[in-house]
Image 1 (cartoon, helix red, strand yellow):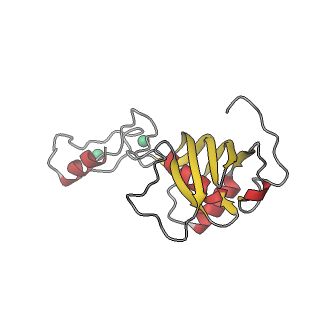
Image 2 (spheres, protein in one colour):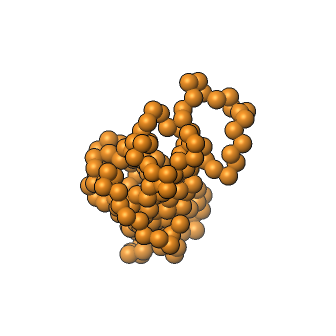
Image 3 (cartoon, helix red, strand yellow):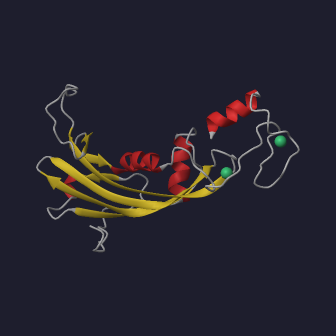
Length: 193
Ligand SMILES: [Zn+2]
Ligand SMILES: [Zn+2]
């Protein structure tokens, strides 16, 4: 999909307060949606979800929606950077992030399907939409959560914090003895890195 550049449909603006897309507005040929999520969008998300682990980000990309019978195929690719705290030194830094996804959204059944279900769409993540509206906003939020590295590192060679005095060893040296591997702090540091 990355080869063509889409014309943004006027009915879909990423600056809108929420990215709710009515299935009726999706033509047979599919609907490309240019994504450009900046501080305003992330700020609003952060207000709703103060536990969010990143404060600021800029993510752009493209999502393509197409109907297949009653199902909706959502293919997308997002990239950008997000402000994260380094898992070693705790300093925040701009981490590059990218994700490609293929999601199949089916109309939500009246009752939840059985776990061992007949759904054999193994290549695709199956999700549901309710009514006529696809909530692209929450779908994008899910993908952005998935983009976050599990252990963000400001640099592969980050020296982290001294387990004894807490000094940031990227910027400072300390006089702590480092041979006390049995100290509780050293054990903790091992677990964390
Ligand atoms: Zn670091
Ligand atoms: Zn120290």
